[in-house]
Length: 97
Image 1 (cartoon, rainbow, N blue to C red):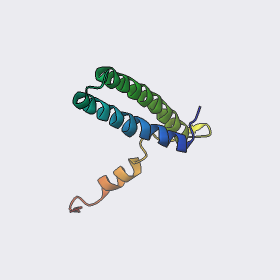
Image 2 (image 1 turned 90 degrees about the vertical axis):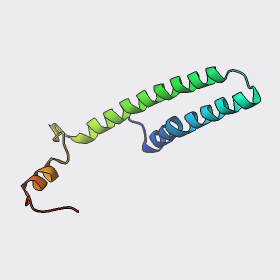
Image 3 (image 1 turned 135 degrees about the vertical axis):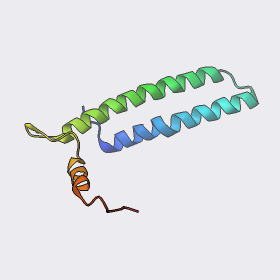
């Protein structure tokens, strides 16, 4: 199943920003305000982020695999191969800086 780009972006933002930020805020404030279950909240957030990260990683790998294939022909694994070859064959005296 291919995730729509908008849903992927939202899930990625939730996984990388929202859950860790909320968990960190809760754990930090729990120490000050003596809120319950700070350790459990931190562990739960870590497990949920790991699960979502793995699922998003699988989705990304499937998307990249489908984007690289055209019909029955697979594109080369390194999309920068042509650029690397051109750079290697250019003058050795050339400097980028």
